[in-house]
Length: 202
Image 1: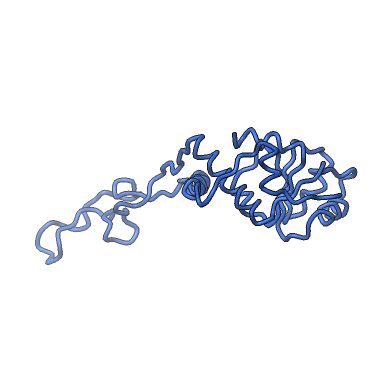
Image 2 (image 1 turned 90 degrees about the vertical axis):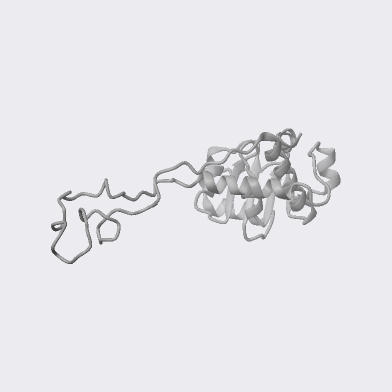
């Protein structure tokens, strides 16, 4: 399977918008931060002294013991008591505007293209759902350690053949995000996916 390195000139002719200089680096940071924040479950929870199970009976009488004046054992200073200012379930998700998402995608694609890590192929397909055939197809394109293959769509056999290959990820052009692109040492894009990517960077 013949592969061609995508240059900045090729990207421009395919209507893929790139950026100049360091423009967009903050957008990449903001979007990656949002991705990671959105994956947080926000389910950490501690009990306050009013939620701790146990009796609310006073520990000992108010006067005459020589000890400090205490109420119940749910006080935070005791083992098994409540927690002061502990975590409660919350939503960590962050929103990022469409313009920032587009700028981040342009920045990441520009960096990958400048590094010579973006390749184009006419198509990517495996006839039989065999891992061996899938590995051979990828090896014929690149010997990179981590590969991201972006296509307009993939056949069921291609998905089945590649599901056990941890260092290669298949993703459609409509779903590919900058985190996946940054993680890969080589990005392989089918010619059918270039139009979708061009629309996403427009």
